[in-house]
Image (tube, rainbow, N blue to C red; front, side):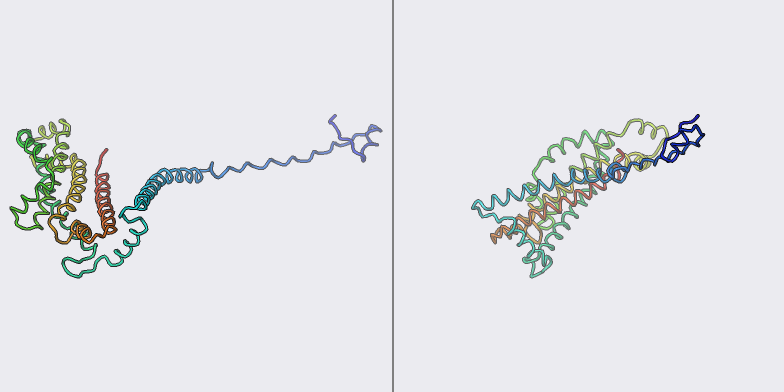
Length: 304
C-alpha cells in the first residue's frame, strides 16, 4: 500500500480504514541553468588577451616617452639654453604650418629640405645597391674572388664616411655629386657583406644538384642563389639605408645646398635651437620609417 499524506479533508477516511487514492506530488521546479561569466566565454577570453597584448606593447613605450619628456623638461628648466618640450612643440606647429614655402635657394621650408635629402640618399643608395649586390653574389660564389677582395674590403669598410668627402670633392668638383659619392661608399659595404654571407651559407646539396643537372650559371643564379639569398640581401639593404640616411646629414652640413643637414647648420648659425631639436626628431622619424618599411619587406621574403 502506497503512503498517503494526511490532510484535514481525508483524516476521517483514514481513521475509518477506507482506501484513499494517493495524492500526486507537486512537480519539482528545475534549477535554473548557470550563466557562464563573460570572461569565461570565447569572446571574453579574446578580449582579455587583446587587452593584455595592448598593455604589453603600448604601456612600456608610452612610459619611456613620458620619462624622456620629463628629463627633457628637467634639463630645460635647470637654467640652460635648451628649449623645453612646450616651446619646441609651439615652434614645430609654426614650422609645419607651411613646410613647402620657397623664398629662394637659401630659404626654403623644411619639407623641401627633407625631400632633397631623400633624393640624394635615393641616388647614392641606388648606385650602391646596383654595385654592391652583384659584387656580393660574385664574392660569395667564387672563392678566388673572395680571397682577393676580402683584404681590400676589410681595409676600406671601417673608414669614416666623411673621410671620403674630400676625395669626392677633388674628383667630382661639385658638392652635390660629392655628397652622393659619400652615401654610395658608405652604404655599399653592408650589402656586399650580407649578400656574400648569404651565398656562402647555401647548403652544398643545392649546388650538387645543380651540378648533376648540368644547370647553367644563369639557371643556378635564378633558381637557387637568388631565392635562397634574398633574405640576406634585404637585411643588407635595411642596414645600408640606415647608414645612408645617417651620413647624408653630416655630409650636407659640410657641402651646403638644400637639405636637412644644411638646414640644421643654418639654424645653428641663427641660434634657433628649437628648430635644431625639431630637425633631430624629423631625422629620427624618417630614418625609422625607412628602416621599418624595409623590415616589413624583409619579413615578406623571409623563409624562417
